[in-house]
Image (spheres, rainbow, N blue to C red):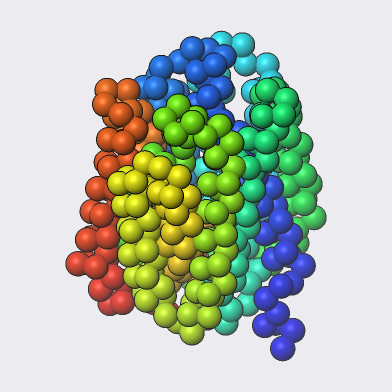
Length: 402
């Protein structure tokens, strides 16, 4: 049936724009610690504080972005947020001090936080309902491709040119391409459910201020798990480039690290798509949690080339199983009118963990060592694994709506 077509034109456009979003963001992100150290002489804990600024604003914006996406035309919200995200990349080209960079990076978190919610919600809207879980998994591959390819390209450009401005310009251009693609989207019109008025909570009723309208309260156990997993990722992904250069003597190692991470992510998403299509959401999440836990353990315990690259592949395999499963869990816990809220809750939890990872990882690296920071990352991941198997998995199976 035509209505069951997964790869329709709007879905392809949403995936392409999402790839550009993450590519433009990640081509510069792993280089920021080097940039701040070489250009502004920032210490490790200063770097952690500066780079966590975007996480703070993303966290402040995400719950409200979920409400806006559920309450107003989604394409309009997407274009406004993506446009601001695109334009702010131009500021990196002119930031002349650590303070100005800090302000700019902090401001950039707001449109980034809102855009990811709007983009993913529209992608879900244009999917046929019978293939939604499968489509969420494939949509996430656009994140993974951007996240993996971009750092490799960024590091290569840095090695060839030693110019940060060229990398900032590339971010600006690719974000602009993503914005242009979104301008051509034609998502289905969204109207409130029967009996629902704009500004009320479909699950509880009441005024616009209902807290459940901004965060999916039913998903709090899953949100705590995601925050624990992203804490580990925040530590490793932020400090990987400077760790490889300073402690392993691998100036070109970061690019291959993210490439192997991408291989793991894509492989596991392709394998896991069948399970998601058949409704084995909790099983996919369980496999991903355990595989990722082993990957971070390998990274923390082996400070050599085998631990470095082996962990990248294993963490990729784990996260590729885990993240689309968790996103499907959030969507399945929410009524259709709260898709934006469900997505914003997922991303709010993710950014919370990443922000804590950046800050605490920087402090641990400054006061002790990168090895200590990576062991702290593993402990956080382990706590999330325990919470999932002891409580969150059963909570989802008991409370899912579909």
